[in-house]
Image: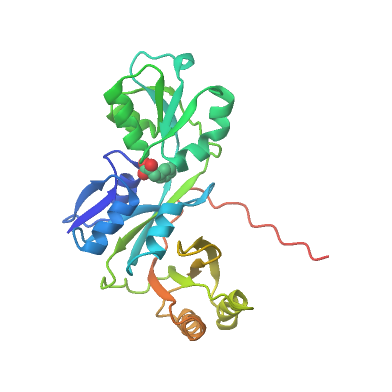
Length: 291
Ligand SMILES: O=C(O)C(=O)Cc1ccccc1
């Protein structure tokens, strides 16, 4: 099977994809997340691996939009990757000559503080991925342009590393998902699963309250709730929900059934094993103070 990923070669997504493919599957790069998902929907590839969210910046909007808009898809797995960022240039370039910094918007937002401090005059130029930024810098060999990418990606494209660890957080983790067509087999329940759901929210009093209530009543632990505009009109939103557990678990199945009674368009994106964390477990969430 061909599995697309956000490329070109050397992206963080490629590293994640390597954890999510079987030995007999082939990885094939795509220039953007929408293109990779379009090729899953058309059947040109069997699956795609795309970045979904980061512990510092939250969700990758193009990915969530690609999942909630368009034909149904199925998430069948996830991988977590610790990401560290380097500033890289063509060989022989000195840091003071950098006027432009190329990278993926999600990488830029995690390095914004360092860039504002160390290269306040440099302009940010969005790239399709961190590896595309590195490839462009290598190809153009412009002494005024640098890329933000993984140190290994800089080495792969023959770039010099001008600075390392320029991200705002040491333990930044990005979550990637493997996405297939709607007929993909749901992985069997494991001891620690996650379920992802898409829900167009009805424009009614109490609509969100009923959704949250369904999870609480059946004892399913809702772990994330993101709203994205449907794109149809101002004020129309689609929710991307996640909870612990598998759709084969009674709590999750009952919560989803109840959700469907309120919002028949609710769509199960998938149930799949949660990936182990690549960093030491974080400090507990502080309890809310009740006044
Ligand atoms: O995969 C990449 O290289 C990307 O550009 C997406 C990305 C950006 C920042 C953190 C993780 C993935």
